[in-house]
Length: 200
Image 1 (tube, rainbow, N blue to C red):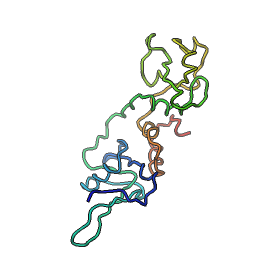
Image 2 (tube, rainbow, N blue to C red; image 1 turned 180 degrees about the horizontal axis):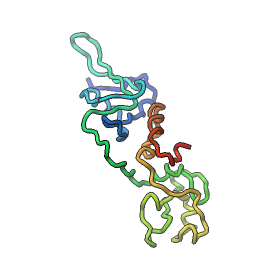
Image 3 (cartoon, rainbow, N blue to C red; image 1 turned 135 degrees about the vertical axis):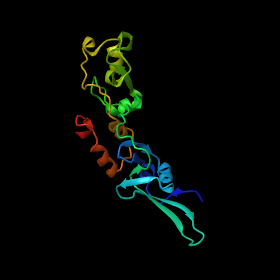
Image 4 (cartoon, rainbow, N blue to C red; image 1 turned 45 degrees about the horizontal axis):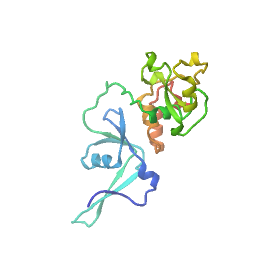
């Protein structure tokens, strides 16, 4: 019988993902409850943090007639090789990640918009040597992007409301998941860089 999530869990819990760490506690990524369950089944979980957040029903044992249960924790460290000196990976620069970094605000007019009304603006235009990198891109509404044209903010008389920055990997994980559990958020916030706006 295949593993399945207990039906009594709320819809929000079913969307929740497990925070994956290596054996040294280095934050890796989000993983699905299915992948987390595989770690438990393979006895590949080194340690966990937090109270169980999901219960998985497995198959039935012939000898006892009981169904197997696995309780998943919100933060799971897996056994295996840890890489304590690994570099903090750079999050992929996508429009969704950029808009999340800037909280869906146009960094020129300060208004908040839906993603359909937002664009990626290059502070120094690409045609003038600017790069498509985190530190040179901001969220802009369509109106402000058209108004700025192929100019720098200073040339256009449109000062930026915030300085663009590259999110840390932990900031990226917070921005990329709308269903973070309390234990996970507390753990992630404790690993944020001191300058992070997510600490505000």
